[in-house]
Image (cartoon, rainbow, N blue to C red; front, side):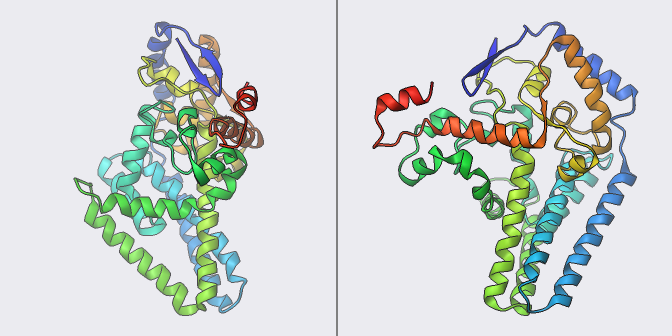
Length: 360
C-alpha cells in the first residue's frame, strides 16, 4: 500500500505488527502518566492570558486617539490566537476530566472571547482528526481560496485560477483574511438549518462579544482608526492561526479515500512535527508536536515533549517514517507544496506542452 504527497510515494508495511503496536504504545504512555490532566498548568495559562488581555485593554484606554493603537491591535491578535489554542485543547478534553466542563470552557473561550463557533470547530476538527489528509474526508484539504489537491486546482477558473497558480507565494498574504473567514464560517454554521449543539448559547456569546468589542472601538476611536484597528487585529489573528495549523499536514502524504490504512500509520505519516524549545512549544500552543497530538488527542500540552521521545523511538523500531523539521523548513515545505499543486490550474494563454513539462 502507498500514499502520495506532491507526486512522491511513501511505501508502508501491511498493518500487522504495526497495528498491534499502537496498544503497546498507548499502555506505555499511560504508564508514564502522560494522559494525566495538568489543571494547574492550564489555570496558569488562563491567568496569563487574562492578564495579557487586561493589559491590552488598559493600554487601549491609556493611549486614546493615536495610531499607536495599532500596536495594541496586533497584541490583541496574538492574545486571541493563544486563547483559541486553549479552546482547542478544551475541545480535546485535555483540561478537565469531564466532557461537560471541557465543552463549557471551550465554548465560552471560543465564542465569548475569540469570536468563533465552538460547534463549527468541533465538527470540522473531529472530521480532520479521524481522517487527516484523506481525500473526500478531511475538511482541511477541501478547496477554499486555496486548493490543496491537484484535481481541485485544475477546476479553478478566472481570478481563482490566477491565485491558485501562485498560491504558495500568496499563502501568507491570504492568511490576513483568514480571521474574517473564521468569523464568517462560524456565523454561517450557527444560522444553518438542522441541529447545532449549543446554537443559542453561542449566538448569545457571539452577539455580546462583537457588540462590546465593536462598540468600544467605534465609540472611543475615530471611524477610520477603528477600522484600521479591527483590520490589524484580524490580520494578525488570521496569520498567526494559519501559520500555526498549516505546517502540521500541508505537504505531507495524501491518503486515498478508500484506504484501509491503520490508525497509527495514518496519523504518523500525514503529520509533521516542528523542532524547537519552550518558546516554539508555547508559540504553537503545543501544535508543534502534531504527531503526538494526533495519536493521543486528549494528552495535555506539558506531556507532549516526553511523548515525542517515546513515539519517535517506537517509529524507529517499526521503520515508520517520523517527520520532524525546523520552523523555517516547515513553512518552506508548505509553500513549495502549494505551488506544485497550483500548477494544475491551467492558464488559458499557456502552451499545453510547456505546462506538461513544467509539472515534471
